[in-house]
Length: 168
Image (tube, rainbow, N blue to C red; front, top):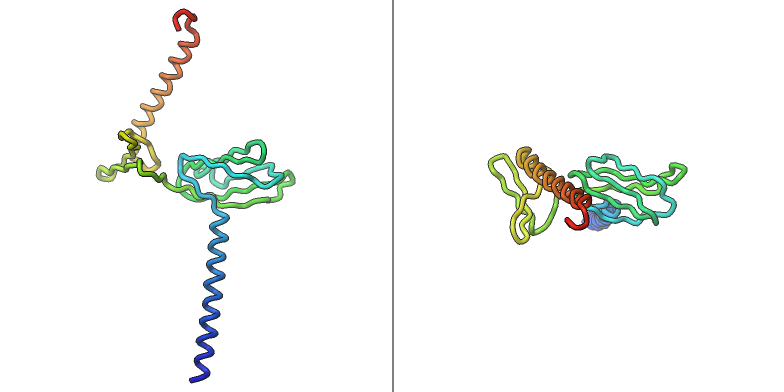
């Protein structure tokens, strides 16, 4: 019986070490993951001497390299992809996972009509907000209205700019 007790203690200590190593590995993996919401942009400070940024799947995320080692990352679609930062010689300086998550917020309301889905931004009043996963008819209709409104505003601005000063 005395031979069983040390083995249990040894097993417990080994098990604790394994759990500790797993926790360290999980936190290191989380540290290498950059999380962003779809349709949002975040700023990341890059290591020195970055010359090129490569995004594994540009349908999930996009990146724009700015002066001073600043990177703007935009969430384009749900999922995860990788992002590589290379120096001028092509050496990998950074390898990160970019995880694009669904929008969060108290103002986002999702309405299901059978299998169709519609998204609304409700702050303080509800208005259509297109989100990936909305039904095709709702998405296209809302996008069409938005495009027409933007085109009308641009056309109005151009007409106003070409009008004589007395008419403005």
